[in-house]
Length: 199
Image (cartoon, rainbow, N blue to C red; front, top):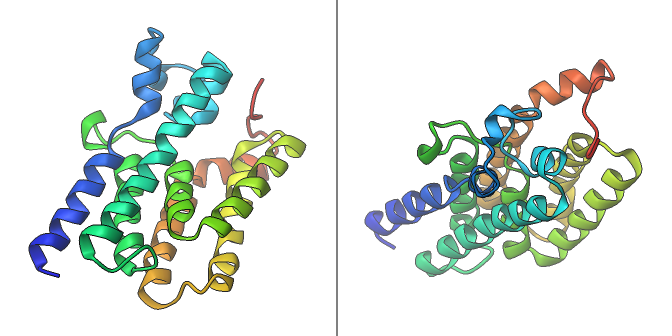
């Protein structure tokens, strides 16, 4: 694979990740998602402010960004779904989601987009983690807790599925970014002031 192809994979994935569905869905409903609720352009804030239907649209859109970016990495590299390029492209999509060039670099936290990467690269792991997230969110009513538990739990599950070396490294960088983006949530969780999934 040429350097040009590699650069194209990374650039396309970042631009795809920069499409913020929370912002777009909010505009469809006459709302600036940055100005309501927590101000975070993500599924949970859309659910609290606009309801389940719009939140589902955001979740599906953000997840598909990860799936498509991972597919771009896998197929343009010619190395398949378990290639390091799959995860490198996924990382760029998550970076785009967190720091979108189309929305003044004010983005979300990358959970759904990162989940889409896993669903494409390791479908079994992706399904396990999705079920785990839903179960924790349903019981605890706090999306950020579910996201952080699933993020940490994703590492042993991916290793169990055979993800190693550079693929695991790029996923680790992606995971680190997702946790970093939750630093405010972590502080509120420790103070027991975190927002619920839905008010």
